[in-house]
Length: 218
Ligand code: BEZ
Image (cartoon, rainbow, N blue to C red):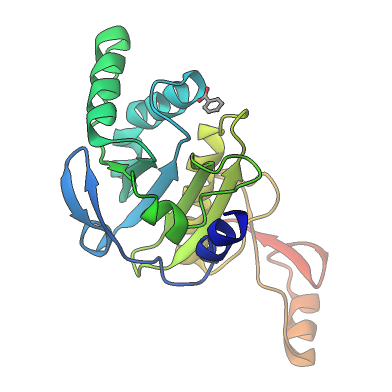
């Protein structure tokens, strides 16, 4: 059983095309490639409906939905629960807290999407997805992956920071240093030839530690 799940649980990697799938969701049947078309997508799994940590995380996504939309990113959740369970849970959270999860949540009852995205980690659970986050770019490529265990909720600030960092990196052809936040300087790609190295050494515009570590305002 363990081998079977492991064989079926190949994890898609950063830089690969996000695997396409068809699924039943709380907003109706959905073809992922159509939903994701020309948009950033943040896809996240949670272990189970009606559980406390999951409720805090999924509510946080709902609260931040407009923030993601303003940055061109669509949300989509997933758990290995039925559509009836999803609907009852979404309604329960709305009744109890006023937070309404209107983004699609996949009812992955046959585990097909969980297996496709490597969300089943048998050492953690054989029947529930771990807390995964996949950020997919408008070309349909996976750009960032996070995995969290059952007992630790994700950090919404970090998910938002990661999305902005990816978008800013693409727009400015630069990389982001540790703890980068909007407004901070970005890393200028290091030189690849001796000529570029000499240019960098002579450059007075960048904040430089050395030729291979330079930052610029963006
Ligand atoms: C939770 O969301 O609280 C949870 C879900 C599955 C296992 C442990 C905790």
